[in-house]
Image 1: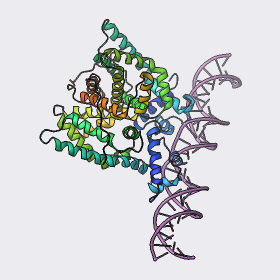
Image 2: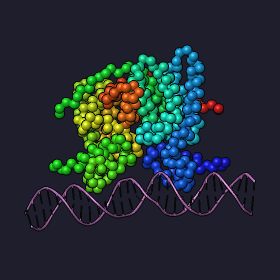
Image 3: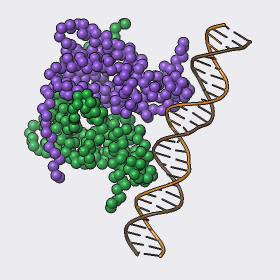
Image 4: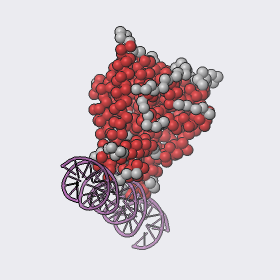
Amino acid sequence: MAQSDTVDRILDAAEQLFAERGFSETSLRMITSKASVNLAAVNYHFGSKNALIQAVFARFLTPFCQTLETAFDDLEASCQEAPPTLDQSLWALTESAVRMPQRNEQGISIFMRLLGLAYTQSQGHLRKFLEQEYSQTFGRFMALLKDATPQLSAVDRYWRIQFMLGATAFTMSSSDALRDILQNKLGVETTVQEIAARLVPFLAAGLQAEAAVPILISKPSVA
Amino acid sequence: MAQSDTVDRILDAAEQLFAERGFSETSLRMITSKASVNLAAVNYHFGSKNALIQAVFARFLTPFCQTLETAFDDLEASCQEAPPTLDQSLWALTESAVRMPQRNEQGISIFMRLLGLAYTQSQGHLRKFLEQEYSQTFGRFMALLKDATPQLSAVDRYWRIQFMLGATAFTMSSSDALRDILQNKLGVETTVQEIAARLVPFLAAGLQAEAAVPILISKPSVA
DNA sequence: GTATGTTTCAAACAGACGTTTGTATTGAAC
DNA sequence: GTTCAATACAAACGTCTGTTTGAAACATAC
């Protein structure tokens, strides 16, 4: 316990509770009692609840982005002339996520849920933090997607990337519940890897769909 | 003011604030002061904050589901033999949403965001309420999707519907923020109808993608 | 005008919240 | 053994929360 495991105990408890209940719905008292540490420890070690939220993200996201950068390096080195295909880029991302050393068996699914919450819960400080710390890697991935889909307009690509992000974050964030339902309804076992294997073709097909023709939607008619 | 407009003033203020900030992050005092009514009015007219949340959903969702059932009736009547196509079913849903009489110009966008929040914020009471009140219409839509994609295995269809749901809920729930980003980055204005027009082809393409071949993902190698 | 039922209002309630404070307790350096 | 910084702890801080109360204001009927 060179540097005391209090910090890690807090991070573990916070990560799990945030994923289960969201940020505002999780109090410091829940976290510290689950972690079996004193209430004041959070403010002592992290400074504030917001800083704790950011630390939870940083603990996962920093090593993940390093792994991802390496994967992108390898990918670009392997195909020197032509840009990487869409499938290659998507799989590089997926494999990096799956390969990350996990704290426990549901590590990825927990973190996907947190990522989803970061988008949907209006945590201004968190969005700023994520953009400031990790925009470089994210931008690199966006550039790969751009090179792989030159036929799309910038606006089309922008929205389709949001759609992909949504499908991924939503599915992975509730993958435990969805897996259970499937197990009960159809008696099928599913791993996170298998979900990813089904998700990637879905995303690739959506991203490469025929560009939408502008469609006029009729105004509401009188009842 | 036959039955006092206090109830509607509260619903209007609550709807807008919930959409902007989420449920837990919106206090009754914010709502009542925005609505210019007394704090106790919420508990007098609705009974509790949770009941107010449900009332906000019911005010929109009940007429919407009626519109939707009618649209499904028309759709099934128009193609008597063959089942409706995937595009037809998706557009029936989209058009019903767009055609709904709006309280104001951003009515749909507000409600889409609320629907997204209903999924991502862990409001147990709300999920129970929605399932109890509106599961019939939802089930009918699922049956339409099943008939429109007979080539998919039950498992594939299950997961892809989750992907579609995720893309939709996620995008719509943060549509305001995403619109702003697009406005700043590319100088493009976007309406909810245009987002829907882009989303539907994406979803249709993803749902009808070639069935995924099982792919083995290699285990994490030693660093 | 008096009675009756409904709606508003100011004030208070009890509890939970994030944060701060002052004091123990620890473990190494000298 | 003393000193000193880092950590742990219990207790309290002030603020905010959803909800309740009891009296005032209002409308309707007799």
